[in-house]
Image 1 (cartoon, rainbow, N blue to C red):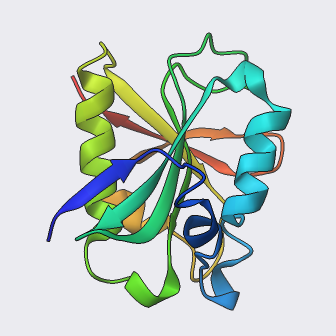
Image 2: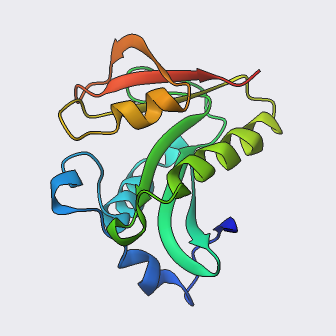
Length: 154
């Protein structure tokens, strides 16, 4: 399996925008279109986003706040995993884990010592996924009630 993070272009935008979670997961992660709209509405978060490809096929989407000046509670950082979506047809194959591994290496290469993320609490949510990847709760919640998580990457 070769997983790559690729820019979203006119050539691949439609296939990336078509990626979806399961209906039960929609309360935990927004669609790619909504995520891109959120990025446009929040330029102060310095959004960095990529399509996730596996063996040449789009399978997901990832978005970070890239090396921002933290402004809690609205802007977490400096390195914040803002969105991670793996299409429902491609879940359970290790793509999400590989994306996080690549993101950790990428931000480490730019001087990061930790990566933050958040998740909506609830049954069927991503808490276990993030825990297995070394993220731990900070004890804080964002304004929408999402649990803030931290992973040391020093």
